[in-house]
Length: 119
Image (cartoon, rainbow, N blue to C red; front, side, top):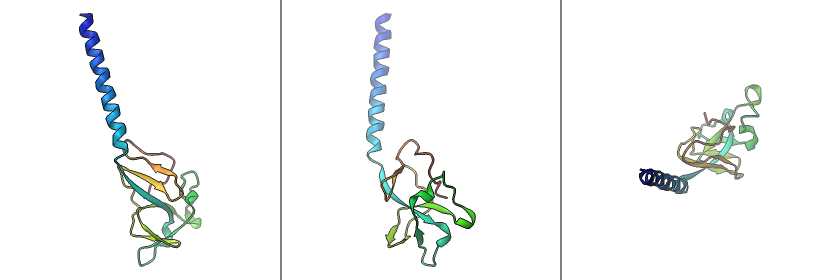
């Protein structure tokens, strides 16, 4: 009976390692999306926003009200200090990196907390 228990536990261990390896390999397959911090009150008729320093999109900053409202803008084409053709809706299952190289969200299981919600 001890041999069957050892075989069962070994089998579970092997399957677990294979599953972990597979999930780790899948992280590399996620699409990468860039993000810029924008002043959401600066929307122009052409659909562009003004890009601001990414510190404004840090949840710890909470810049709202008379000082403006800021959000991450995902994907987009930047021209000078303006960006367009993207979205303020945070995409899922992608790796999101700011223009300065800060990882905002990793593809797969969850993302980094403490950053703007992309509303």
